[in-house]
Length: 114
Image (cartoon, rainbow, N blue to C red; front, side, top):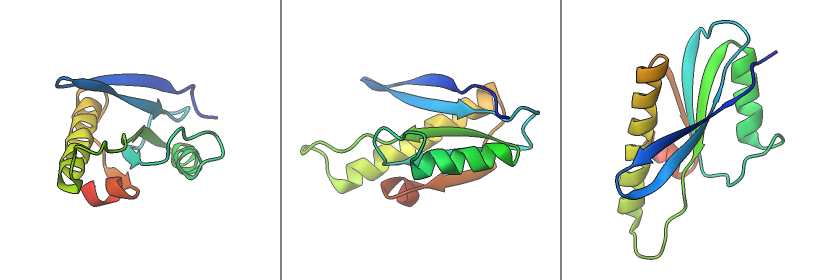
């Protein structure tokens, strides 16, 4: 049975904070996965939640977060750059507080950034 998730907040330079969820297995993790997605409000039935649960059951610690959607003033290149920055920020947080990610999963824009 997995441990209760931890909710993590990582500051961004002059922007809203990056909010993530860390799921840990009941035993020490064999590795850490970073899962980035564009599914708003991923609930228990979402593909991201199912993937995270499966990875956690397999012994991975999983840090997952949702990319925010673009506003009309940003270009696709700006969004991709921001997505890559968010992935880097999340990977650095994992490295500082746990272990760096050994698995990187991204969906949609997050997949391109990954």
